[in-house]
Amino acid sequence: MPAPVLFQIPVRIYWEDTDASGVVYHANYARFFERARSDWLRQHGIDQSGLAESLGALIVVRRMAFELDRPARLDDLCWASVEILRTRKVSAVLRQELRQQHDASLLVSAEITLACLDAGTFRPAPFPAAIQTILAASASPQAVSP
Image (cartoon, rainbow, N blue to C red):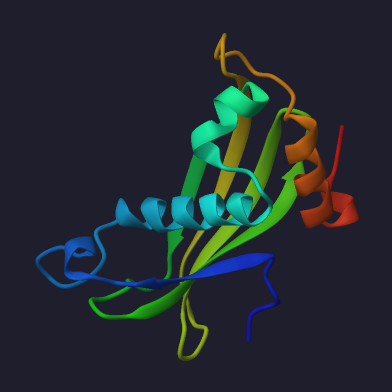
């Protein structure tokens, strides 16, 4: 049984998510994980659509590495999760997983590095205080580094 995760959302696999063989097309795993990250931020009062205007920042994916254990298939009910592994001033590393709802078996995992950019210059910038607070509260003490 997997360890408890920070945050998760339900994901149902629809026809549009699959290829001709009925398994999830690989690029769609990134979409499922993006939804989980967006909903995790939304749960903390951060609306990404207004992030640039309200906080002057953008959160972008800098790196994404997937490990496919088993494919998700048409009509599967899954959980997409978010877990904070490491945080820094301008970046954070997350582990995200897609698991079957019925038995919690791992389908896909990803290590994703997020970076904060200044919305005006598109240059690296420290996460705004509100996001730093969320990251710090969500990460284990050993996950925060300078």
